[in-house]
Image 1 (tube, helix red, strand yellow):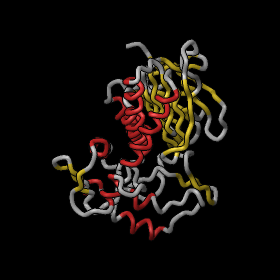
Image 2 (cartoon, rainbow, N blue to C red):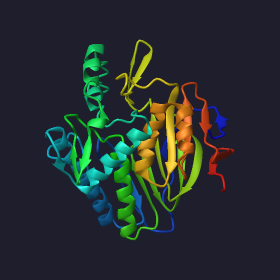
Image 3 (tube, rainbow, N blue to C red):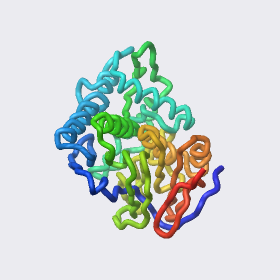
Image 4 (cartoon, rainbow, N blue to C red):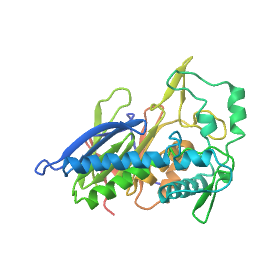
Length: 318
């Protein structure tokens, strides 16, 4: 297990600074994929529009709720379905992380997560959860000759697709000649060039730490993102596929930093599901990847590849 440095305040990832001020940039925010999407890049407005069009196209393929999307067809078809390369890559990577996490990361947990009404603050009945859990099993998902079968399960790529889309946007902006860009899809951030990323307290919003990163991606998952508070207890959205309830292991959030956003996205959820000790062991086994873990007592630990000076976080030199 990696050695860690202990801090004392709850963190959530937040984008701080813009691109190189000496070069022209465009920035726009829209609500897509049920989240706030902010794109900032050294490019013209037409390129920004093209980036949002790419987001919309990928959403139409990967969304569970968009009729005739690949995922919608998988969830409403018996047997194998021919899907796009985008869907194939997401499902392959999701199954990889399912195995890596011992089944804790499970894209078939959809029947359970659908029961939780965070918008209206409704906690489902225990019997409903128990019945839904019978339909959760990522091992039922099969890939063969470029086709996928959900095996009668309902899949949801929400724990990995935004990371994949962030990577696709990075590739798009590079192809358009952008030397600097920042992509923010909910808890996923992708960077082209060097930028400052700020870290803030949840619920509070005040920035307490910053990190200067270059050509990296970052993702944060936490119990504060969507939750129901009832009788003094918080029921959050990171569902344990074994219990059907929000995972209970003492972690409040996990932030992962690596080169690919699809991996950051999945790993931040995996870390939350595994708990700090097992998550640290996993991150330790993945080259070029670091993490920040925050427990419910607001104690923060950083993996050994990171260190702090004053209010800034840096990577240690290898």
